[in-house]
Structures are given as C-alpha cells and as structure tokens.
Length: 178
Image (tube, rainbow, N blue to C red; front, top):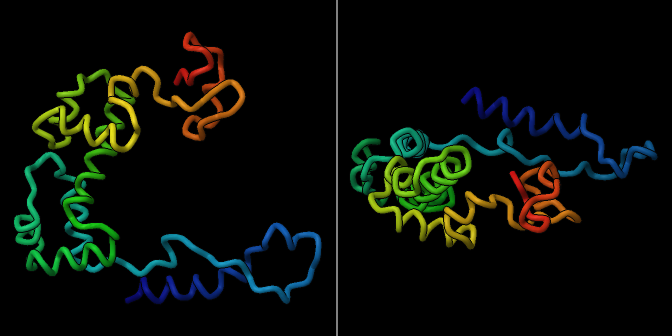
C-alpha cells in the first residue's frame, strides 16, 4: 500500500520537474506535460504473479508445468494463467520460454559452451528446441549468431545492439565483430 501511494505521488509530481526538449527555448508552461512512463507508474504485481515470476527466473532449468507452478504459489492453474496474462502480458509457459531464451542467448554470446549444453542449462532437454526458438527470434542459428552476433551492422550504420563499437573493419565485409 505504501509503494502504491509513493508511486501515485511520483506520478503526479514528476511531470512538473520534467521539461520537454521542445519547450526548453520557450518558457510557456501552458502545454500539457509529456506522459511519464516506466516501472514507477505501473502498479505492483499481485503476490502470486510476483512469486511465479521469481520462481521461473530463479529455477528456469526445472521441468515446469502450469499446474506445478500454480501449486508452488498456492493458487489454481486457471487463476494463475489469468493473472499472468493480465499483469505480465503472456501466459506463464510463454514467459518461461522468454526467460530461457534470454538466458540461452546470453550464454551463446558470453560463453563458449556448446549449444546443447547451453540449452540443457536453461531447461531445454534438446538443443534443437533451443535452436528452433532462437531461430524464430533472431532469424539465424545459435552457431551463426555466435560467429556474428550483430549481423545487421555495417560500416555505415550500427545495428543498435552494439552501440557502434563494432563498426571496425572485420574479416567478413563490414559485419559486426563483437
């Protein structure tokens, strides 16, 4: 309750301290302040959803089902799925897939683990499942991504992922070398 009150206070007072860049030259404050968005303006997650999110993130390698997750947070399967969809935007198992995919991508980028080992460490029993989700997200295999993690970088334009650090000449005709 205290966090909700604090969030509401910040939501109401913060726009008065923010200045729209277009208004910096004129001191006319009659224009509506631009909307403030972010985690401070979003209501907190219900306890069961927060617990489920924490469980899925901390124990992603376990073989989760919605029924097992619901039992862990002491609610019904349908109620958890409904709450998850409303507050997180996706169903619990889709959220788990995204968590696994994010960690799998980090492992592919930052380690030399084989794809199958990286897949098992995030909870996929078969590396082909991880590779299929990875290809669906990035349009290339994990091995291709490992070789060239930012393929849309060229010497003329950055891909945005590497913040233009990779714009050095590379062996593969202007491809990102990070």
